[in-house]
Figure (cartoon, rainbow, N blue to C red):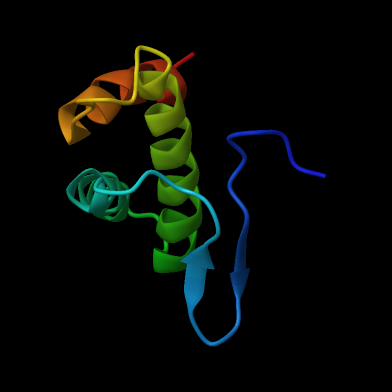
Length: 83
């Protein structure tokens, strides 16, 4: 059993996440693009980027989900990536 906020992904022709934060696609794209620019494989960027993004979104949501913007998740990303 996974804890709340955990990211589960599986590959069945395509990679997809079963949990995430809706409306944050631009933030997720930025995280994945940044990791890819640092030389990670595309498979690794999708996995690590999705995990970091989901955790940052969960952290940002602790301050309230109403009115949460992608920039809130990006701000929380530093705390998730560098605890």
